[in-house]
Image: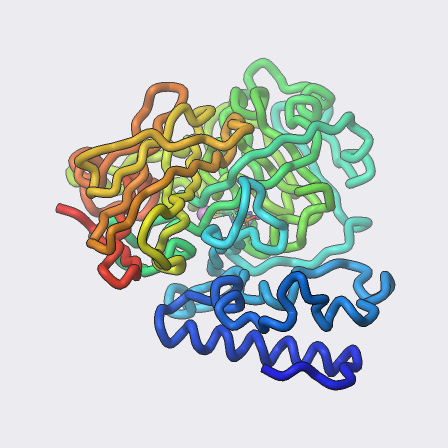
Amino acid sequence: MQRPSAPSSSGRRRFLKAGAGMAAGAAAGAVMGRTGAAAAAAEADPTTLPPNVPWWGQYLGDGVAAHPYGMPSEFEAHVVRRNVPWLTATTESSVNFTPIHELHGFVTPNGLCFERHHAGAPSLNPADFRFMINGLVDTPKIFTLEDILRFPPVSRFHFLECAANSGMEWRGAQLNGVQYTHGMIHCVQYTGVPLKVVLDQVGVKPNGTWLMAEGGDASGMNRSIPLEKAMDDAILAYAMNGEMLRPENGYPLRLVLPGWEGNMWVKWIRRIEVGDQPWFAREETSKYTDLLANGKARYFTWEMDAKSVITGPCPEKPVLRKGVNQIKGLAWSGRGKIKEVHVSTDGGRNWMQARLATPVLDKCLTCFNAEFDWDGGEVLLQSRAVDETGYVQPTMQALQEVRGVNSIYHNNSIQTWLVNKSGEVENVRLG
Ligand SMILES: Nc1nc2c(c(=O)[nH]1)N[C@H]1C(S)=C(S)[C@@H](COP(=O)(O)O)O[C@H]1N2
Ligand SMILES: [Mo]
């Protein structure tokens, strides 16, 4: 690599791009996914290393007017949501996946939160937005966004997991990447108004026991929700991670049902009807039900069972060197806090306790880490979450004994990563 003689601002940028391309190219030849920092470090120009003053420290950088809305470094361009084109017929009724292997801490940046739409993400002017509550209430009411913003706000961190997360893996290992096997999850800080506060204002009648939440997008997606949950911890959220919701996540208003399956978190919510029985909508009968081995189906499986996954090493993050390596991962439970996470390097024969990173919050992602000493042999990495109710994340065999193999949704089984002798990591099924 050559140092540019008189780097103009754009010249410098071209130089940086070329450098990144070379470095990433060299690494990609060896192991898929070995890009970014590791590759760049291998190619570092010694004349720019400390104590030398690097060339980029000898010129003015971008001015403050350059980025009115900041973006990640161009060297992080590989950290993006990804979809699987063959999975769905269209991109409007489809899903993309959070790059959980590239994230740090438990908060998902807004631009990386996976999206799941049934009819695409509508773009609407909040001035035209209305939210209605009708049915078994004393005073049916239509709210503007302004009205909603006038209630005292609450802010809470919660994960949202699509019930179909890991749904491809029921009959065997399918997708070779943690972004695809476990990326239908995100965790942000929501700000909004407790649904209870709004329901109390319209006055739910004594016989009102169920709610129907309805989306304003072209899918008109709706779900039945027991009043108990609405009065417990449901939020009508207008913000995520400190800014208004992104259009794809329901701008300007979405339902937040902590710990419950993502499908029920109605986006672009336009109406809640209060009734005295569930509606048995499409999304809770034909979809989001689990066909058991005996031909009957489970339904109203709202709570997300405790689950965890190792996000490094993983297929996208091979083991790069022998000796002590870090295992890192995420754990969560729809029933409360994570109590413990165990990790295994021998496919579940022996377990050791992982460290939990604080804070450990209710119905929120929890980060864990542990060390493992790699001698260059084959290793079977697993993690197992235990939540505060004492529930232990099951193996796929144990899950199949209860659920059979016809399910798509609610696969919270233990994931196995095979680290082979060259350090590459593969999605495998044991047994
Ligand atoms: N109105 C509406 N709400 C919706 C959906 C939708 O298509 N329309 N998809 C649901 C599904 S299946 C999931 S998993 C979550 C995804 O939320 P996200 O796009 O913010 O990740 O939104 C739910 N809410
Ligand atoms: Mo979903």
